[in-house]
Amino acid sequence: MIIIAIIILLVIFSVVFSFMSPWGFVPIAADWSEIDMLLDATLVITGVVFAAVALFMAYALYKYRNRAGHRAEFEPENKRLELILTAATSIGIIAMLAPGLVVWNKYITVPDDAETIEVIGQQWSWAFRLPGEDGRLGAVTTQDIYETPFGLSAVDLAAYDDILIDDNEIHLLLGQPVKMVLRSIDVLHDFYVPQFRAKMDLVPGIVTYFWVTPTRTGTFEIICAELCGVGHSEMRGYVVVEEEGAYNEWLAEQETYAELAAKEHIDSVEYANNSE
Image 1 (cartoon, rainbow, N blue to C red):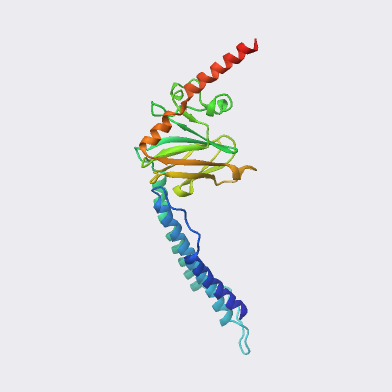
Image 2 (image 1 turned 60 degrees about the horizontal axis):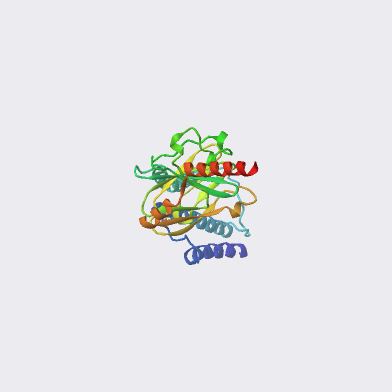
């Protein structure tokens, strides 16, 4: 009887704590409220299943407890019970997965007016690349990853106006859809901003992506949500969402690949002259 009481109290505590918990989602700052709804639906469905299974265990312990004059019977299978459990499980899984597939379809369908930003992850920092005046990102190659900034191809003219941000902070324009193109140059990482809800792995050798539309201004922390080595906990950055004026001012301060290459060339010439 003590075990039955513990099980019932555990269910009651879990339900009450779920409604009265001081912890919850951070305030959303993007247009992915559907993800919050999916998480809530999953919590409700799994919570109902947990409570039902636990209370059934308590019921079974009480009903089939050892009593004088009662004898257990071996029943190797019960087709009716198996059909009921299979149907109930199928309904629960469909209820969780079907809405998720609808949201996933939206998640990977980038709006036509979305801007593109490349996110580069490496142990243990972030960097970013924006298209220049031509509106497209230049080519990158694995062979150039340690030869040129971000692995940009020196023979692709479209790369020279790309804006390079070798810093853990990226700025986004409020209300502007953004396609985040993700690339890792070493191990598996994951780009995650809790306030955006959206996240995606950076897989070596593969370019992944997701899109998001920031809906409120502020500074939000970037977290690597995939264990990537001893410095994993320090792999943090910031997304700053701004109004158009502040965003354009920040953008004008950033350097292009051509400007950076010119500076490196001047520095190398000066070093050579000073060494003579």
